[in-house]
Image 1 (cartoon, rainbow, N blue to C red):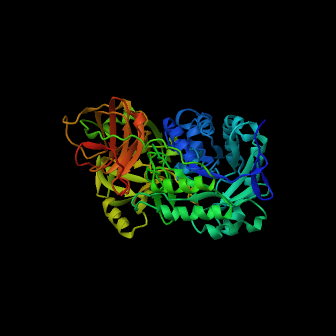
Image 2 (cartoon, rainbow, N blue to C red):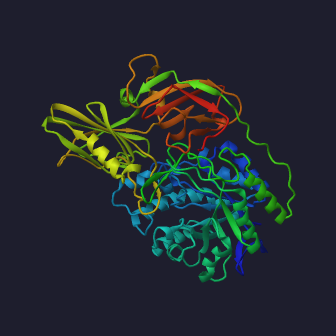
Image 3 (cartoon, rainbow, N blue to C red):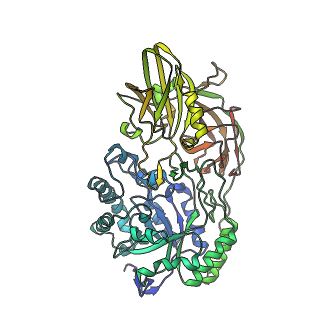
Length: 589
């Protein structure tokens, strides 16, 4: 007979008995599967009874109609592992999840249609959502508590009141859940501001709150909804980092104070995050409020478990509090992760990007520059080239909608770098204008624009964040007729590497390759001396690095390593020495 999870007299009930949710957030897609059981067991042993996870549409359906529920995104294995260690599960399938994740979890191909309207009662958008949910719910349905599984609740949309107020849209999602056999408790989650709750809640679905402090008064926001359980669906125990900002931290006692208040009020909570993990590959998202702000690769979040799964002071204090509250004995914990120091690794082979374009890119032609999505590209870089033929007097070049970081070349020489993060700076605009002046030319010249993407916006009004450029003008003339190379960086085995000592040193983006031996354990690739780019180890994309910080070393899970290993660094700007240091400690400045 299946268990039941219901609400009775304003309280959660498990099999008819009062039940408090003590949950911790852990996203399966931010931690390698080999570590799931370790992290989930540490959650259970800290006195928690539930794990919460978002579901990332972009990795489950990377191309329309092509689905993946294996490996890093084997959500069934994750849910089953949680049940194995004794945890219930809360699942938040979106379709939008925010999560500081690329495009808020949406797949980039949604943006190919310029007329699509996201997160509203748009027939085309909802048809894509339904196609995806049919596949996703097919794999989740057997694991609902009503079917003998451990999923006790599922969320409808995510913080919708922070974005819109389309009740027909929320009702359409609610109906979709019911039609597809989701018969567990459903809920929404929003900030405590009345505007957010008014826009993001619907009848018949439990409202829950998101906040990180002032727990003593925060639940007052639920009073207009009558007698409902006090549930904080996201208790923010830390925060995330943007490139160029300081690393966020939070003291253990500050976090503990709020959890003590949850217990005092008899409230339920989900700690966001319990284990943050890593934005591997191209999956870190961006914010756009006062300006464009991309998120770093680490999603440490100042969580009780570190990015690499180690214990913190916060972990031990919360564990003591929750276990004492529930009369759970403090049993022995699993050991801390094993770490290793590899040392310096020489990068003694190189391959220049432009020499290898035909090998690692797809070529397209279009009269005007289109966004990356128009060429069916989701991530990586895109390179636009066009010719100036005839006689041109000196004039200023303008490039519209650079998303996000571009090198501009004229006759193969770099003349400017355009950084979307600096687009509102007056002095940067003045500097760029000087750099983008093209002197008089005659004959034939080539203009090239190489754009590196920094993650689509995951929150707010600027969600439709198409990558690349939209228009190029020289004075008042629109430049046309483009050859476009889409560079997804997922086929680096096709690069033609040479010994680093061979050939001239060019000032252009370059791939550097090295090899190293490794033992057991996790480590970090320190990128000191490099400027901006990506790191690949044994073909796995560890993520972005950038010398503006705060992150200066990328997490390298030991499960990716073999006795003999290959590392490739793709550097967009310049570097001091062709070597990296692989160490046993992170570097979050």
